[in-house]
Image (cartoon, rainbow, N blue to C red; front, side, top):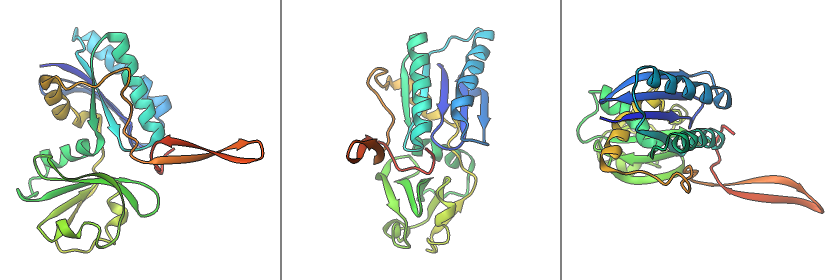
Length: 244
């Protein structure tokens, strides 16, 4: 089985891990962020040193591609690309919302077979970035930005149990009062949970282009910059996250 370096920087948590033979063999995480610019490089260096000290050759790098924090995603993606170029290994890009689902599928036996999963990343005000998956991680609805009301997920809640989790779920718990709504606290996208998805893609040869791939920012972001005669706006393909 491959040895894969995993990098996750999409939220306030910065984490790096190494997996081999279907298990996480090394992990570092900083839950006090956002300190990604300081922590990510240190964590990656320590992870690579760990692999080298155990004579484990690196086969690939997996990165959480978003959506999430604009700054965090760029730091993680840049670090992942740098390692890929330096070590001549392929890059695996994993959707962040799928990464969020992994601990729910692995460790929450209460989730019914017919349940739907709604991972949520916090955005401004009552907005979240979310998707709707079944237990096989097949999308019932793709990734999008939702301004959450009581009816936002009603069509899915009327069908059966729906589990909401991620750092965006706490702020909408008081809004979604449907009897089929379930909330799982303290679920974060972590590097040590990336390996089941990354190893599947590695075995299938599903790699992303190191030169041209970029994070999945989801939304346009406009930033005012000084200009002669007034204010000009720069448009970027990024998302309106609480973390910049």
